[in-house]
Image 1 (cartoon, helix red, strand yellow):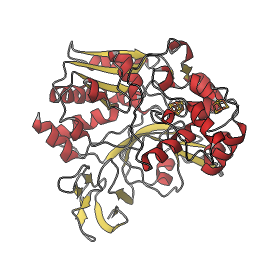
Image 2 (cartoon, rainbow, N blue to C red):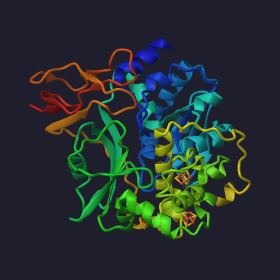
Image 3 (cartoon, rainbow, N blue to C red):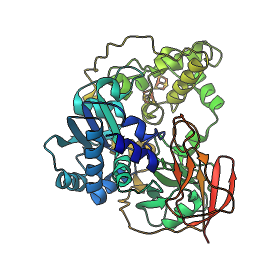
Image 4 (tube, helix red, strand yellow):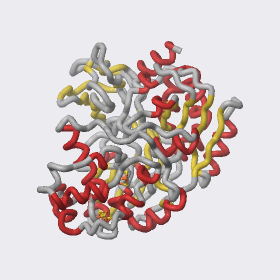
Length: 440
Ligand code: SF4
Ligand code: SF4
């Protein structure tokens, strides 16, 4: 058990699906359930499906090893029913009676950790809690592949990504960490228009790429190219002050944002319409942001789907959470009695309807896995691709390194993750929490 924790720590494995929590720390727990999250629900993204189809054995192997490590008696993999080939590949790889596939419908946000845990185990995570509070550990699919590879001595040097939208050849593949967004897009034939914008890791919960020279990291799940003039890009590019100003004057308190909020429907006290009301009654809402924002998971459904006025309830919730934390009032003090809303199932949002609403249905593609070896001339390796402290360089400028070689270590006694070279080459710079490696 300790051996796996050490192997995963040495390999620099972090949660690939979100902020990058160091996986070896999760493996130190004890839990009843170990879940694999393959219920990918970001529109246009297909990386989890492709991983399960093409690397199903490694997914199952990583899950078995991780489950044994935390002494979990039950294991399950959440997959959408529509991804039949992924289900078949995983079923064929399963070797234990204690492991099963749990099928989800094609709704957003099926892959939210709270939704996944409830869907499979019937348990509800306490407000502001983590799955471990109710005896569950969850990893995303790529993380499990990386756990399996860590045992084989292979550190994390590549990230599995979908490249899609307005690119010539949408595809999903492994790419070396540290490759620039600009070069990554060229792997898919490049953008098909001159005036484009790029979303990183999803349209709903991802970020707008501000600089095409920024490197891809362990947590980059994909790149989606859209026209710069697309409504979605224009909406998320609006400055925060303008978002709140519009909300201040235009919110009619219809409460659709709350009635369709997945966390509210799961039984948590998330009420974005009340957070929006704060905007109306205070100076930009800064004084009275209330607890109704604290349990928001930032799924974006209220802003990008529910609100008929095109307002920004998610952004109001995010601002509210940040303000409460700064004022040292970020802890949930409300009720912990969670009752699932009776309308939860009938108010789920089908992905097809969400894509129509976002205006991205025409960009859907299979983006199937293509095996390739990408060998860039240069990579820029961020020292902080994870939750915790930045890793500390263990190499010097001018030093030659080999792919897989350790280049940065976790600071003593801190939470963090190691970083390994993703190409053979020479260290040409160490600055701004980044190590640059030039091939040659
Ligand atoms: S859906 Fe829009 S208009 Fe209605 S309460 Fe929410 S923010 Fe206001
Ligand atoms: S982003 Fe909106 S819909 Fe999603 S959890 Fe937060 S308040 Fe609810």
